[in-house]
Amino acid sequence: MVAQDVNDARKKLIRVFTFLGGIYFFLHFLLPESAVSYLGWRANHEAISNGFIVVGAMALGLGIFNIVRDHGARCVFKRSGWFNSLALLLGLSSMLFVTTGQWINGQKNSSDVRRVRLTGEFASRILSDAERPPQDRAVPPLSARITALLGHQRAQASAIEGEIAVSLGPDAPASAPMLIGEVKSKLDALDQDMSEIARVPWEALGPQQKALLERVAQNATKLASAYSLIKQANHSRTRIHKLYTFLYDGLFNQLGSAMFALLGVYIGAAAYRAFRVRSLESGLMMATAVLVMLGQISLGESQAARAGVSLQDIRQWLLEVPNSAAFRAIRLGAGVAGLMLAIRMWLSIESTSFSSRER
Amino acid sequence: MSGLEHVTPGILCVLIFAGWLLYRELSRVKQGYVHFIRRIPGVDALESAVGRCAEQGRPVVFTTALTDVGPTLYACLGVLHSIARRVAQYKLKLLIPQYTPEAMALVEDTVRDAYREAGRSSSFDPESIKFLSSEQFAFASGYMGLMHREKAGAAFMFGAFAAEALVLAEAGQQVGARQVAASVSPEQVAFFICTCDYTLIGEELFGSSAYLSREPVQVATLAAQDRLKLLCLGFIVIGVLLATIQPWAPRVASIMPDRLLSSDWGAISW
Image (cartoon, rainbow over all chains, first blue to last red; front, side):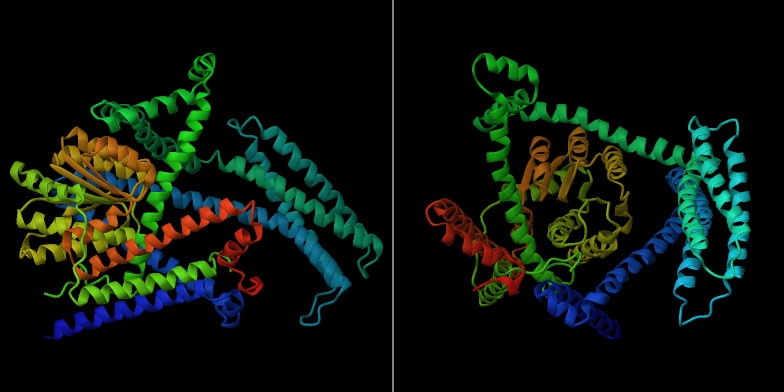
């Protein structure tokens, strides 16, 4: 009795949530843009949409847990097909390991490039703060900030030098000298700016100081762009990246391509079955297919041109007129049926149809 | 608003009309009105295919392939329910390879319910609903392997399909399975016609569930959608007429579509 009540309550809850979720998107669609903004939905729409992503992320964690539990048990107790489960778990763990490594490397690269870019952003900020001192926060003296900027750049310069040394390894790509030359020239330009900055007095912001900071901002941005290319080149030589490329591009994608290639053979087999002329309809289909195929190739076109017929035009007409009409009819029918079913689902009268039939 | 379109007057009218039609047909069916549903040979073949499996002692395979949770999946579940009930009655093995994790829970619930209705709850095996992969061709290769290992006697492919359609259908052909396909993807219909014994095209997929179950709600929806389709046909005819008279009466021909199709309600001059 209690179980029945809980079940009924659960069903009611599902119906209420379905209806509320449906009415949100329905009204969103129905109301004019001004009304949506007035109700404050515009600002919250992204947050609501993100809620669906969060539910998906939870399901992902649950999925991994289930795979490890089910297939792990199958391997441990050596149930039938345990070697398939083992292959699955090995594939899952190796891909997880490699992808995590790849992600960590990517994060490190981005943060290194970001630190170089920060030199330019810092210079721009010093300039803007000196021109228009902010009212809401205290700013250190200009000379102290310049000292910090010089210190930051020195640290970045040594990091960049280290990265350049790595780029010169025996397995360096052909483009390495060009990339290194690019980074070195940008680094030299920035170093020159920094030397000038160190020589100039920074008690107040004059035209010379202003021009120097603007130049630093520009050169640091250029250096960051060139540096990111070197980082990428170095990253592509790491073992983890090579392993990732082998597993993903070399194995996974190629297996997909191999399956796709089967279609070539299967289309031939299916065409043989379909084009056996056993009735008027199949004869008509065969004739149409031959016309479309001949219209597609230059040989058919050249042969037809001699007879004064444009096979390309016939093919075009067949594809654009009867074929498109049939496609539209199918899409219209399915669309109308989908709309009706969607209304049924939204109002929860669908659930009585099969899955929760009264018994 | 980004990501969402707003309703146009024309679509709003269609939506209101669709809601009213559904309500009207539901009321009529509840009052005992019996709608005629034309015979669909492909749907009749579902039962004979399951019967053939019972004679041969071979399993039945049902897949919704790439179908995501939505109206199409619900239409497929209606058919799955009928097939699963029959499979349970005949004590056959039912295999349902899955592509979409979200759909899996709904599929399992539907099959469990069908077994319960057939009075064979204990025969229901959750392992029969296998998640293969949500990668298109990995799913296709898994399906092929399943068909060859299990030597399925019947294969039912219902829902949305893409390039893997032919791979799935050929796998069934290779093991000599009786195949029925129903797709809302027009590009794949041609492949199914070539490789399957029966093919349901477009909305026949939505009608098949009502045809099999004759349930009032489903039959009423089928009737309502037919009437809505008639309205759409009317719109097409009006559109053709307006396009035809365009050279002689350009103002009449251009005003109506503007009013019906603009989503900027404030800018429409009535």
